[in-house]
Length: 628
Image (cartoon, rainbow, N blue to C red):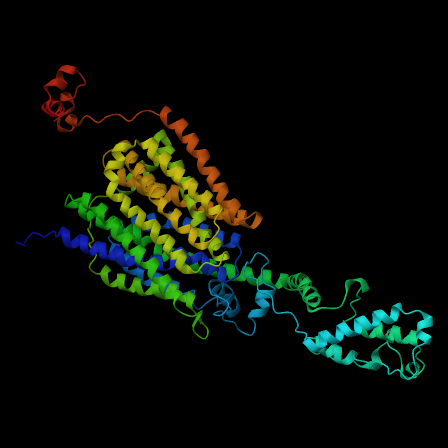
């Protein structure tokens, strides 16, 4: 006779906690910064929104299906190991194809560096000069340098020409014949102000002679009046045929600089029009390649979290210890904090390129793959419970039925949907706004860490908070804080300014989740709580995040990031008012009579006052209330 199997709950929780800890370190090394990486490819906001929206749809549909197949076929460990292995490989593909251009990498890397530390390549100047107009990192090249001697000669000739022009014919006759003529300095002046040599042209191919030039024979018969014309012609030729008004005064370096910068927008427009068809095709080819890789990555990675969490929950449920399952989320948050901070700290202390041709942004993906491999080693010890129950599909169907039949669940579903839509906009494009203001990835990582830490600290006061506020006011508090966050984002003035508002995530996210979970526990029938939570997470939250990602990209392209965040604020405030009006009109939750759970059959259950008085549990509860 074989010995009974020993169930070590402490060991099971330790392995599950370490598994989630290392897995979340890897996740938060890359996923919060994924849209920043897409920007290095030159993808526009609508295309980035499509990629992220498709990613959410794949998770919402594929993750529950794979979890169901893994459970019914007892293949959970195979699914977990395969998901870790292929997700590590899929993330590495983005570091090889499509390749990043060095100029594009430097354009975004130099945003966070001071002028003395900025790096460049031979072609980086063209990217900065003719890059996107909405890029705040536009750096103009220096204007053509004019030597001090050249500027002095310009001023002297200009003043002399002006004096000769104002001389009367009588005064000109008094000029001595032996007065030496001014040398023709046009060649010298042109070499002084021209930034680079112009290509030579064949004189024989010219159809006409310049009107401002005199032949050698004509120069011998130059009169004083002709000298004045010749001087002005030299000035116009040396200034690249840019006529100057006498009233403007002498030619200065500032006038040449302003003229140079005035031509920059024209050059930008010409370059943009010339390369627009080619850039359109290149951008969409890159978009299709990146979309395909991301979808494959999500297909192999999405089943992991759902399958692993189901496995450990059923394991603890079998030994009647599901209350200890809630403690695992703390390890997920600790891993997320460590992953977010460590990767940005590493990137902030290395050059734009680790080695020639290897951008530092690839460290996100290398770190992710490394921690996936570490998690893969732990997956061999991960607790897997083979349950003989087959009610997985029926519970999912019942949960879907409740979502369309119970008004309270419908209200929760709409709240979760709008919450997912709003939060996806900040998750996708908040870092874009910070990057436009010259933020380094260090501020981005710190913003993620502060949000997570604030939620963990508030967990200490969870019991007191839930006793003080009802479900309605907890939801109202969460929606209000979230609306304030988006309004704050729209007026963000510096990268560091995002850090204080991240502390409100404890109320805008965690309090809202606690309220929703408490409502589900009160509404759901026994054993259906977890199924409803998972259905809400997949269908409501991820479909809302998908719609928010699709819409946010087009809003940015049509308006701006500030308008996007303000729109989210208005949407949340509108739903807050509607929620406060609708929620009191829904049926109140029925109080559970715990004494009925002990009744042997239905004949003993009665709502009469006499039978309730005879119930020992009811009497005990009443006595207990009298004591207090």
